[in-house]
Length: 308
Image (cartoon, rainbow, N blue to C red; front, side, top):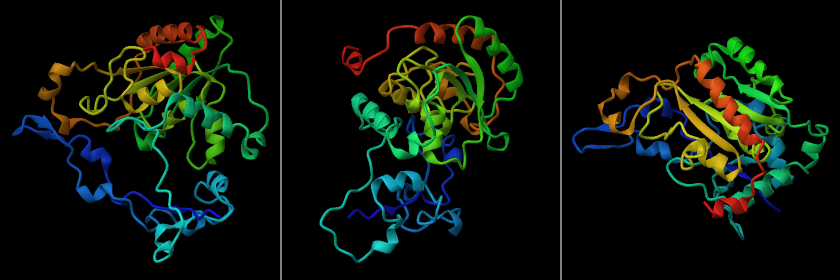
């Protein structure tokens, strides 16, 4: 039988700070500045996880997903020290693009998504809804990268109802929802608008041929996070790469465009990567028109990626 051991990031990591402290003018290159020990996973429960949400408790840490792996509750890695096993599987392959390419391919991603949709946890949530949402992903104001002019944004997007049978919705308060419910929440989204953040990771639940419009705060470092402001070009970036594997159209827009040649002249330490944003509605209007046009095209297939 399978035993599941959990390891966690270093509890005092502050990636937001290190993301803007990368300039090494002496060498003429940009380097990461975080301490090396931050890269090592920890074998004990992190300080922020209290006993009420431990994985072996009902509604514990990702209990719905961990139950797919084993009927035994997950434990911290430390609990298994000194024991012997016939086979050890070290982690799962990452979907992320950033410092390296994802080790998944398009077909595998679609297979996993389809498998999830046939699990008892997913089907218990009821039948899927028609794909009719033009959704805005809103982060909590206190966490940063929230949309300040959300009301005006919703009003502007509502004007597209005559172009397509779409319902404008706001996706928020994902934290604390079971994993499967979060995955399913994006199932009916045809076009998703949001600021760079973890919520965009759920784009792989969207239907093939859907579109994502990702906004970046001024403080998002251009030397780490490519943002070309063109459709389907940032395929080696965090969400652009994930969108490519999921057969989703993607565009990244900066609040203030930054050309690659000017990156070295910028004062990164004065940037705020978590700044809340005010969307340029005139610009967004034009991009949404493009997004809707792209979603009306033929449904893409994984074989299309091979031809690119």
